[in-house]
Length: 195
Figure 1 (cartoon, rainbow, N blue to C red):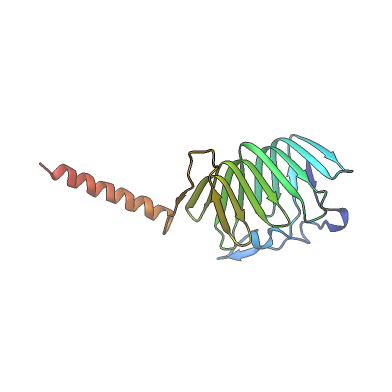
Figure 2: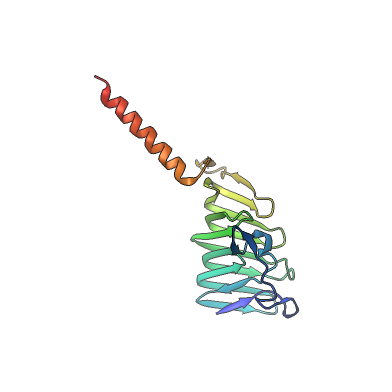
């Protein structure tokens, strides 16, 4: 079952609202156009409260807005602050988020709890959180990601032994694997040549 969280006057057809980004002859939605799209939610079970403008979606939940996609076991939507100010809270083991950036690359994230604030264009990740962008990854107890500015803020819970862990990768993804394999191979050759 699909639904849109926008008021009837704000809805547009998919063809009216089909602005896309083009790069090297590929056409796709990206962060540049995602926020002009409708939010569409699918799940096995949905409970909608029109008076309070809240929704609960349960089991196999998929929320989409252009290239933005959230997958979760359970999602609560609070639209009581009005159109464009919805807050979507997703829980899962883990809940996941992905979105295509303007350059065509993907940002992906997962956590036990994901909160998407439509008005501020921020994603809050809590509990075994990690986010990956351009082959670099940040892991922490909590991560905040500003989608428009592509800025990440991560911290550890004061009661946790986990520290924020960042892995920065340069170059093409396969270049690093090949360089590491060559390094390990050279190291093994040196090791075998020693008496």
